[in-house]
Image 1 (cartoon, one colour):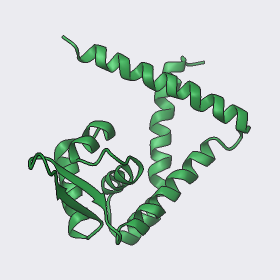
Image 2 (cartoon, one colour):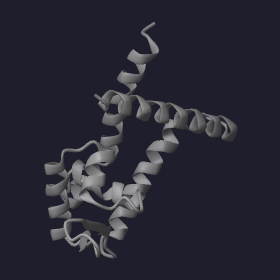
Image 3 (cartoon, one colour):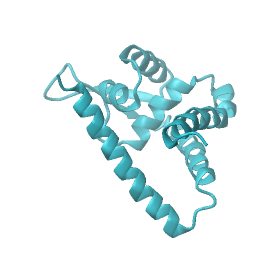
Length: 150
């Protein structure tokens, strides 16, 4: 049997394909791209992380990709930009009232993916899995910080 690392990497790719396929009807109906949905979901799901830099850093998208997505979403009235009161170089992003139904629909698709992934877990198993996953994610973040240091 392949190693845990190999299986985890394979799972990551497979789940990404599954996850993105779940959004196809929404993408076709709205004309949005998956990248734009990623930006919208990030902003809807992460209050306080509301700049293009935050989206790029935490979602792992190129700044240029985020900028293009924000431009399109703002032009459609889904997002609004607001300059920071103390630093005009910083622009805060927010889902608009008009964009909220789209964000909620995308969040529902996202939540359904999570429910399907954990469908056979008991509530106790799910709680334990979430705790263990948080530890793995924290360890991974520490490893990435160590790697970034000279």
